[in-house]
Image 1 (cartoon, rainbow, N blue to C red):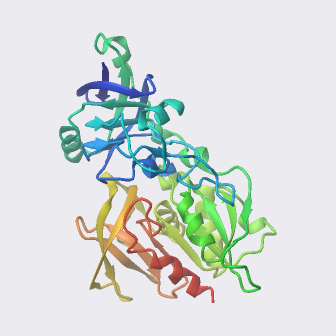
Image 2 (spheres, helix red, strand yellow):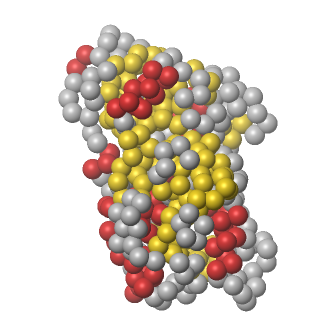
Image 3 (cartoon, rainbow, N blue to C red):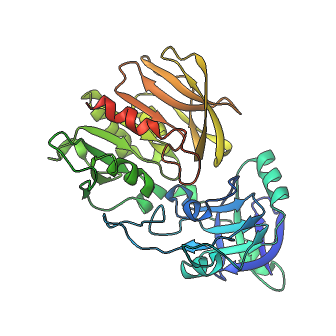
Length: 371
């Protein structure tokens, strides 16, 4: 038997799969019907125990971890699984897909990630929606909870999770296609836990990338670049003080800046805005977002987006800034932009993977600013 024990003492019992070990983390849920490979390798999930609300997970297996021509994973969103555990109603030991090379359970075992199957994920999700995200512990214990279920659960949010997932040194990627030209833009990318498909989205548009550690002193470097990008990532944005300060300096210099997910929160903090933690976050591939016009008024345009975040930007923005998108479900801020048109960010994921590609055009919008 395996158990999930929440911080309030609530216990869910199921069968173990993946790695037969114990783990602490923050319990969250994702509503996507597919995309478990991309979700588990998304660095934004660092430190969390991920519950999938879709009842059957693992039926199409896991593809290979081969690298692409740039040296990073061709099929995954990073080179590791970042969750601390996986909770499902039913995991499929058998899989069928022409790209699959492994079952979900074997892949998780290889990366030492424990999982529990057979849990009432509907009941667990309803509890998290009512009480908000909670700390939890996965334990493997055939005889019951025993001593393992006692003691304080480690809180991953007390650690600098961004520092754990960011690159440690500058990496530069030259675009292979389309062929670079003298006008090829160069973007300085703060890697706060960047998804590989964001890199792919820039490279396939012919953008040269300087991939920077989250705390890199860009202002004091001799790197040449045309714009700044701030990536997605895990944890509380207010812990990224060095990134916030660097973004603040780049905006003061008038350098075009674009942010995604955590990057939106960092951008908001850099210009004097504020952020707060959501009750249970937005994690899924069907989040509707309403676009606002240049005056901040709602339009009739709504796009369906892929999201994975637990913090949001407060809707009281500094002078010159407007709300760009809001969530149609709860009205939270999903995008901000400056009246100059040079600085903007979105809380959702335009690169998707997994999810719809409604917002993919935002990469092109950013590049148009650089023309």
